[in-house]
Image 1 (cartoon, rainbow, N blue to C red):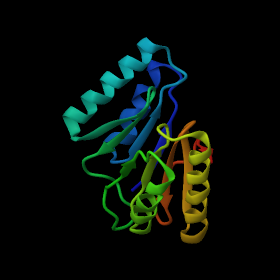
Image 2: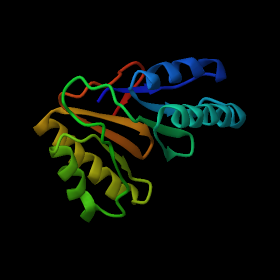
Image 3: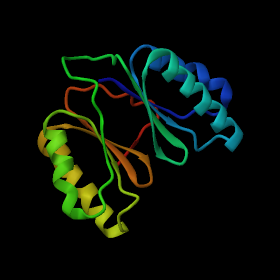
Length: 161
């Protein structure tokens, strides 16, 4: 699955979101630089894309959304599955490893965890990446995406964890 992280500066950047999504690229929309009104307009635009093309939109944090196309562009034979996990404590770390080892990108929403437990889980994820290959991207302060080796990711303005 190809992943592109976009940070629109204003509503005029809406074409960029549509361009990637319509090509089957999983889009992570970071709207934190927009006003609430511009962010609402872009979310409405994205909802229209989903309605017209199929797929799914998931809120990762108040102003970060993931658009998953119904027919993903794939650089290999991987499926278009992305698993979103919201562990409540470190004991749920095995779920992250389970999906990642299967080659499934994992979005880890650590907002329900204490800062210490969240750091532990990020360290665990870094070990997964080191051992299995791939990449970890910070989507917001406590939301990360783990992309297994062999899956393309847009690195335009991504913050690495």
